[in-house]
Structures are given as structure tokens and as C-alpha cells.
Image (cartoon, rainbow over all chains, first blue to last red; front, side):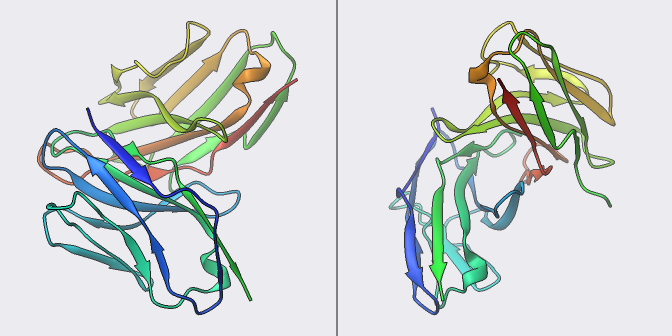
Length: 112
Length: 116
């Protein structure tokens, strides 16, 4: 079956620090990969996605590269802001299927 | 577009009562998902509909939970009778699903349910 493993949080950083949140996956097919973000009191929002190997998804300064050889999709940002404090979810979707498999989420706390 | 709409945003009820959560998906989307989020279990898919038909309800925890989608613009998740362990945030999401295409899901703001 499909599964997604994320690093446990919380991740605590100072403003302008470099961020990495690790995500690895197992999938029976050739999945599409996603990062969703959940701000306090809100639903999940799509942050970025990648649909094939070596694709790089990017949005709002965040990036993640689809690495098929290591089955990974790590999230990075060069300089975090206090407003980036949220819970980040890695997810995958098998091609042609509607359902997403989510990781457990990683809380990011950024202090001024 | 208004996005996915859920109501109520907060619900507090007593054990044994019936609870009904409501969802209006984004117009034109053909897939709808109900999730439950708790600290202990994270985000769990309860049930998903495609073209108003339930496709996978294997995540529904027990017979006390039921979901319906009578038309393309409305769905309900009902818990009867409710129990304290049902306390969670329930999310509805919708997507436009086509075979072979990336299926981005759009989430509603959630309903926070507290069962006393």
C-alpha cells in the first residue's frame, strides 16, 4: 500500500533560518507528490506539487524536488518568516486516483 | 468562487446526541472527501464520493457514522449517537478528478466537534 513518512515536529527556528522538512514515501505506482500547509484554525491549502521524477515544485519561497531514486520529497525554504508558522503535510496521490495519502504532519514554529 | 463551505464551524453536544455536519463543495467539482483530524491519529480519510456516489467508505469508524451526497452541491456527515471520542475537527474537501490528471483537493475550514 501507499504511505508517507514525515519528520516529527515541532521544528523550532528563528526568523531567516533555513528550513528542511523531510518526507519519504512508498507507493505501488508512480505517484504525484504534494505539500499542504495548515495555518492555525484553518483547513489545509495546497502549497506545491510535483508530478514526475526530478520535477521541482515551488511556491512562496518553498521548494521540493521529486526524487524517485530516494523516494523523497523534502520541503525547503531558504529564509523562514514568523508567518510561516503552521503545520506542513506531505501527501501522495496515485495517478488516476482521487484519494490522497497524507503524512502525520510537521509543526513549524518560527520565532522573531 | 467561495471555496468549500462547511457548517457549523463549531459544534458542542452531549454524548448520545445526533450530530450532522454539512458541506458544500466547489461548483463543478465531482469528488468530495470527508476527513477527521485529531492529535492522536492525525488526518484520516473517512469516506469519498465521486459523482455523488460513495466510492470508498473503509475509513468510516463504525456504524454510528453515515454520510450522504444527495446532489452535486451538498453532503452531510452524521454521527448517531455521538460519543466523547468523536471529538475532532472534521474537514470536507473537493476536487475535479480526471483519470491520469493530478487531483488537487481543496479543503473547507473544518467543523470543530466537541462531545461532552
